[in-house]
Length: 213
Image (cartoon, rainbow, N blue to C red; front, side, top):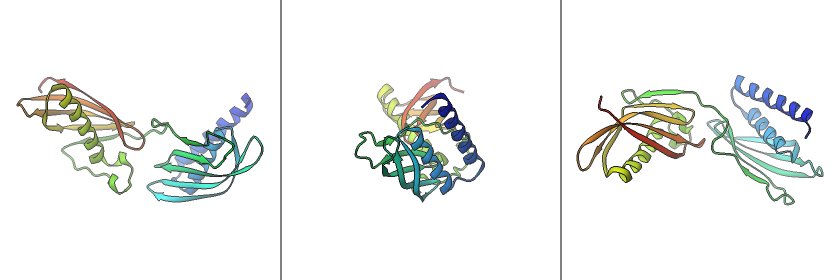
């Protein structure tokens, strides 16, 4: 693809992103996102007979036909979107070995900042019912707390209790302050941070002890 075509493709993607940000996410947005992803591969074009089935919470399964750029042959495709982000896409093309793709866990999508203090109620959607995991602060804090507890158990002995006194969620990273009480006695104040992938699954957490306040 030459520079002119790349530039045009970039303008198309930018326009589609603007459209998505200005309006509520719906079937049309899902179909357009999948069309852009397939076109960006450089291997497929001309989507047709597309259909988007809502899974709730801005999640869709998009199916349809697409043509291979190498010979214009037509193939079925499936594109999975979860919470406005493409998590995987597949083209039923037996002549191409790499026809199934899963997007990177650290995607481009940017989440808004959520501020939370443990003194307030956790007024977020419930992740267990299929909601966006980043709208469920109880779920995010629980996953982070388990990870931090695991690290402290390995580093400094068994934990009796760990408490988060503050929690700030920004761009899939949860940070805050709290304290830990050990089974052998004694307690320490700490700060922490936990990083999550786009599906709301934690992949690592870190902590550091601080002076008593």
